Amino acid sequence: MSFSYCKEYGKDKVIFVTKEDHATPSTIELPPPEKPEGVITKDGKINWSCPCLGGMATGPCGVDFREAFSCFQNSTADPKGSDCYDAFTKMRDCFQKYPTVYNKSGGDDDDDDGLSEALDTDAGSVGGQNADPLADVGNNGGGDELVAPNSSSVVPKA
Image 1 (cartoon, rainbow, N blue to C red):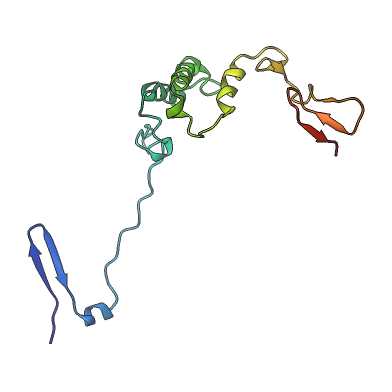
Image 2: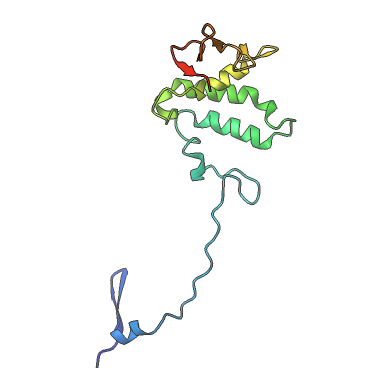
């Protein structure tokens, strides 16, 4: 007759079980899994180790990121974060110094320029351009095609 037993080897325990031991279902009840904390903890603090931050809180611009993020999180201005312009500008400037670290798209990403263009707004324009994105699209001479501005692309009219 075989029997189950446990043997210790230093810090390790080895449990030897019989076929009969495996035939009966386990009676052990595990506790329910804990919900992982997000970027903001239950007590309202920032969880800088949250994987959702993608490592932004570390690296060459980590301090600037943490200052801007903290400012936004703690902002009471209306709209929220409008009092954090200087912190976000400082963070953006730092990101631009390290494009290989903070531009994860691997290509020419026009989104980088969106913030700086939006910050340079004039009345009636966005980013120094006409607010109507189609205002510069013109007909190329009465034909059935449209020519996009600053482009050699020709798009057939629908």
